[in-house]
Image (tube, rainbow, N blue to C red; front, side, top):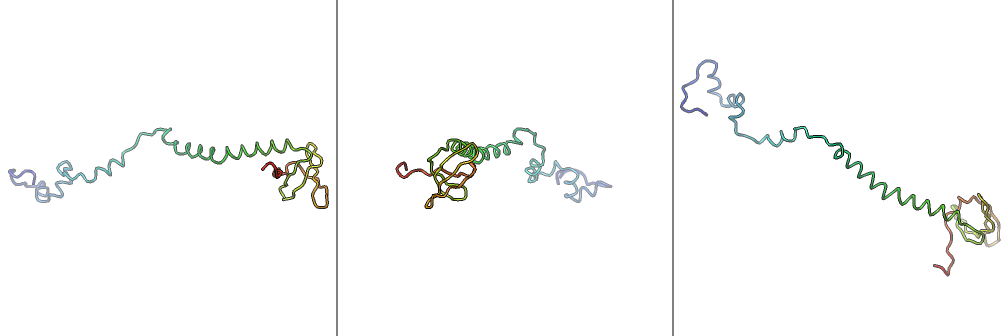
Length: 138
């Protein structure tokens, strides 16, 4: 009991004097048990900072841009440059896997000569996948 030299309680306060648990419930400061304080700290409202709130999303967007979109844009530019510079005599591979030599090249189409029978096939420029590098330049 917190007050050892106090006179005995009577009346409605007698319940408080005889039941220490009830006394602690009424007087929480007398209870020196602070095990619940960390949980109360977690329940406090944190100040909201909009930049700190969206920082993970911005970081993820930057990672996606630098790892996915930027290399794809470089590859598209390189492919467009290659298609623009196609000329007669270049050996190319189409998207379908046909390897041939360009006989003529127009604005939109190219004509390929395919070995062994020297068959001429007409393709769209966009059907060209890669240029085949000659053996001496590897």
